[in-house]
Image (cartoon, rainbow, N blue to C red; front, side, top):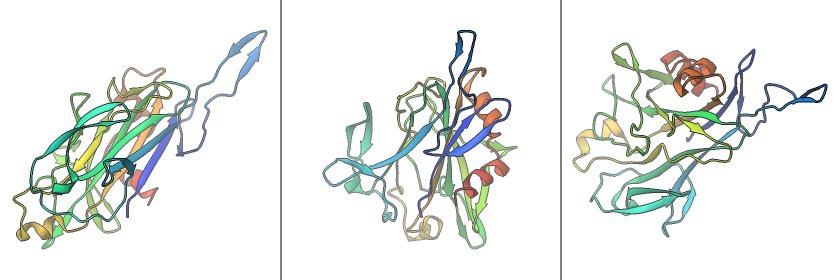
Length: 249
């Protein structure tokens, strides 16, 4: 089951968290002796797309079969004004195009946190990212998804008996999105390597989950995106990630 999660945040005397489509203001309009103070509102929408058989972009759908790729044909694709090189779906690449739009009225720092499903093989949890499942990421900000660490280990959470490895993506321009701006994609596609055979089936399986949480906070008063988002939501660690994803299960 796909879990698509939106989290909004604004920082004031107390930090507040809400889910998508809620409108949240950290001050009310104030007026005194002809001096007017306007308010800011942080509000984001996360979208996930895929291409249909005609090449048009439609909402992402779950439960698509996964098979090893059979070629490397690609094409230039424009999504919401951004151009990407994407592999063709007819050779078993699967689209999962994730981006965020700032529908508030102030600049916002934005990140998307990803939880990639791990597989239990003979009692050992295997990270398919390391064994033949290779997501294709947008790198317009020069980085792509960052694999955060808990000490020397990957950040891992467990939900309903399944473990997930965590990655985080800070959007371009220091993750700053101005009002009405739609970000470039943080994730484009994922696929099974062409050398994957039956011996890897238990590791990757026919069904695979990628969970997403997008977070936003005002830019005012903060020096950069990680500081702002960590202050608003907490660090990207196992305990916090487990709460973020479990809250939307």
